[in-house]
Length: 123
Image (tube, rainbow, N blue to C red; front, side, top):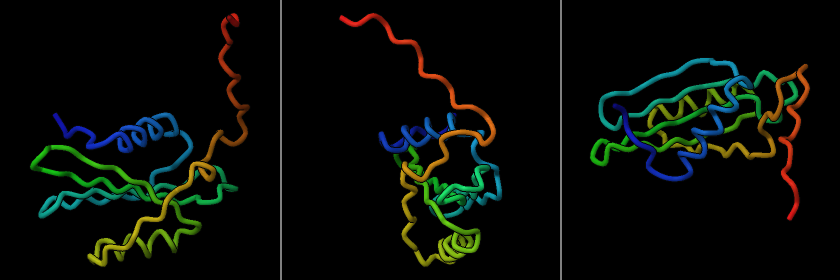
């Protein structure tokens, strides 16, 4: 019933978030329904050694096309994430810092990494 992803980047981020959902803890979210529809969600990495442990997800809805875009920003501290959050909702339009793939958590702390799937015969 909801909106469709507006682009491939949104689809890829949604897919990664579904697979990484056990790497982060939910912090807070806010949705603005009047004017442009936007939702922000703040997450914290469960891995205490993550380079950018605080993440902000920003979803923006295009009510004309009935699509949405999703972006992710990475922050080194709760204070930095909160400063971006407050500036965004104060309508200052701050740039959402990119969360580099190299800084994302790749394994749940304390659990072994999953083995690679078996490879078929070479041709």
